Image (cartoon, rainbow, N blue to C red):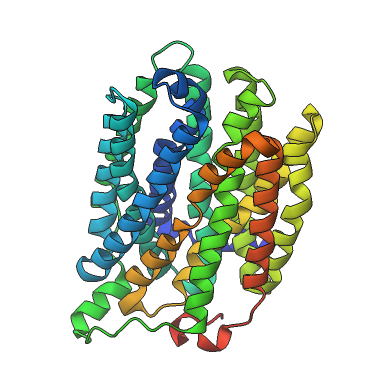
Length: 400
């Protein structure tokens, strides 16, 4: 653990970019996950079924595909910083508009438009972060960035606990405009990627995007590990409300436990990758996810549910603390923005998770449906991560 604290100390001079990337992803998560807590309520408001509401989540994720590729290409051409700021303003604006929806169709359209920015923020900020830090600290920094998602998820749960019982559901989305203020911090406090600036100054010719085994592995891993993530969290509030019969005050503690475990686990996972390597960290994490699903969804006991939330946050979700570095190192600097963007766009497979789970729920029940898809995606992700593709990693991305 001393190595982790040493890395955190070395990140201190770079706190602005770390905070910006972490906050950007966290506020992005808040704007997205407020919907997850409102699915049972909005089903009544819009007279929509669970599959129809789950389709909103899936459609938002599909829009993310467009956003990640487009914003990633923009990050290669215009720098990492400008697309980062514009994506923040974009998703904040359309989250606020979601609160003005007057029908299921209008709500669906606003969330699709929100999804375009939802994807762009991550691809731009991940490239900026990985190119702005010393190599030995990138794993820890990636974990900190990805832990921002749980801060956003936890904040959404807190608003559901405090705001929703006393205010209209629309205010949950109006609060999503606040992240636009982060763009001011990025504008004034964050520097452009030195790697991108050096490339621009030297006027290097734009090289083609090389599709190597390492690239294919990274994209495939992103597809299946994100399917696991969406199966874990997208319908979890609905599960707690409709299966475990908890109200807003009862839902919050389990979301808090899951989120805090993830906040601790993601930087730790990033550090373990620096020490032991990708495969030796990822494969055990993913294999241990499979038995954790028993406590997370299948055993109807408050203690088991709490332990399951801890394990799912500390083990399964902490895999995502590794993702920014895992994906970024597979591309040269000249094509990193678009490469990372396509990698994140590969999560188009994952966004089908809530819809597929909702479709099979009448047959299997929500508990079993979630458990089956979490375990299956974890197993496939572990198999993908097990392959050694280090020989195809560009020299600038080689492990130290």
